[in-house]
Amino acid sequence: MSSPRIPAFFNEVQLAFKPLYEWAFGEKIDHPETTARAESILTALQAESALFDVRPPKEIPLAALRSQHSHAMLTLYNTARTLPEGETFYPMVFPNLKRGAGDPTNLHQAGAWCFDSGTPLNSQTLTAAEWSAACARDAASALRHEKLPLTYSLSRPPGHHATRDLFGGYCYFNNAAVAARYLRRFGRVAVVDIDFHHGNGTQSIFERDPKVLTVSLHGDPREHFPFFAGYAHETGAGPGEGYNLNVPLPTGIDGKVYLDALDRHALASVRHYAPEYLVVSAGLDGYHKDPVGHWALTTEDFHAIGERLGRLGLPTVVVQEGGYHAEDLGTNLVAVLRGLRAGQSAAGR
Image 1 (cartoon, rainbow, N blue to C red):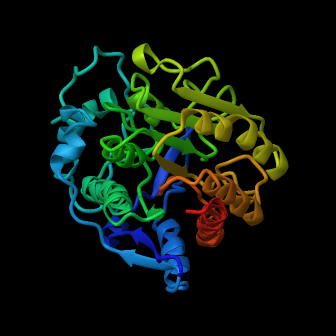
Image 2 (cartoon, rainbow, N blue to C red):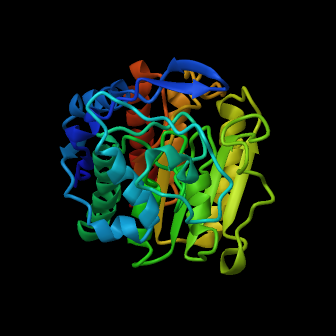
């Protein structure tokens, strides 16, 4: 019996959001989070229609966002909707206010809910971010209700840096957390983040939750974004103590070193935790040509990463995060998904 096609969720409305530039260490540069990223992935998925079933997601219930992100953040994004078409606002002042302080109806106070100057707001931000989160929720729903082994969310903009009440790192809603929160109603969930950058938002959202194990392999935060989180001593808090694992890795590593760390640390922890579901934050900016990441992974390495994750034998939602070499992004994403399919087949799923 042949395996079912892998559902891949995407809404073209997500392409309407087009940040043009960002400020990086005081320098104005072209923004890496372009529509070409999603277009590259979509082209690769559509070219293999025997393997992938591209579907539009349903609108996400507002309650699913309100339960995860603060009312003030949602209000701020709504405020940005009033910006004139073509006008973009970049937070530049980041006050050290008490949590929840500030006026989210005044964009000049947006820095109260943001931690960098590279994540802009415009009239299309909220719409794109809502549909990005909707993709992740529908991918989780399809996994559960259609009893599928594997689903994919083409979430753009990405999400793993967004906390409950802070946005940044090109992220507005935490899409992987949306998927994990949906699935945790039915059993324990492991989130494995393979993006070059630490998933600080996902860690923050679940740091006190023993029903969600969060694991992140990433560039050493002493040298790389987000700098303030992702250290090995961060292991969770309160009832979630021991359910967060950070694996910082050196700059410039190749696939052999990465796969060894994945096997010895990340996958061993997931097996010990024995979850019912797996969510993969699929950042592909560890690619050797990526302009933002600083590893030397190849397309073959991404297939191997997927294959090892698939051998866990868990129903798996893959949520798109980073990856900024658009030319090869679709190829690398398909490699991960093919690897996952192969690993799951070997594990008997």
